[in-house]
Image (cartoon, rainbow, N blue to C red; front, side, top):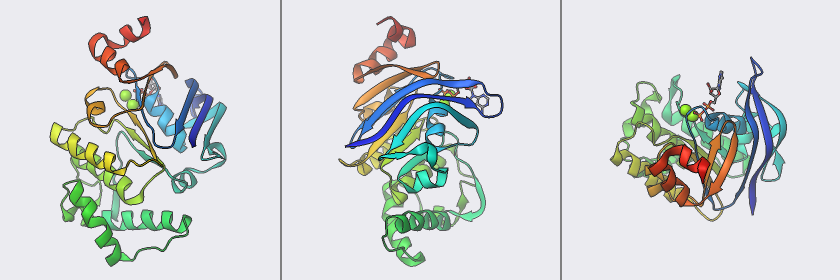
Length: 251
Ligand code: ADP
Ligand code: MG
Ligand code: MG
């Protein structure tokens, strides 16, 4: 079943009107894992931010439809409640809000949307603890403020914890592998794989083939200058690793 359909999407930086996305096309079905690779500055992060409605960007053309609904008609919060999750390349700190409260709030908001019962703090604690365990995170994380004083690796784990807690139909993971050592990468990959079902999908952005060894993509796309210029299977990543983006362009 179709999950996301992006057609000829163009977008500019809201402030300067500089065009960054120059006609992106992407179709994602339920149960698929898509990877977007591409040189620094090719527009990967912009694309993911435009999908979730980041205010720094303005869509100037094309369409993006998620689960049959026009994303352009939805506020960022509605998109997230509809099941679109995004991990930011640089996750933000939220001073004064504990991780536990933040996660419980986000979880309950989504439960309300799905007409399912909300969880109180104690029930939520019981729900979240096994997930912390899976990610090899200490329970202390729950009492700390969101991302405050977290190391790079802890932030990444925390992002995946958010995904595991809230759940998503489409999870967009922007460079979850950057700055992670191999053990942390494996923990994060295991958690993501554990969330994958026949019903939900992942769109991951990465520079490196390494992540793709742990989370197997159905399709790999190469983004260049604000467009997806190539789509294929894992052999694309292998060619990239060997010959760089130039090799892809010449193929
Ligand atoms: P990638 O994630 O592929 O490395 P980005 O999407 O972050 O690329 O950036 C694409 C291009 O757009 C870069 O040249 C970047 O500097 C520019 N860009 C993106 N967002 C902004 C912004 N908010 N203000 C100014 N330039 C931006
Ligand atoms: Mg970059
Ligand atoms: Mg980026």
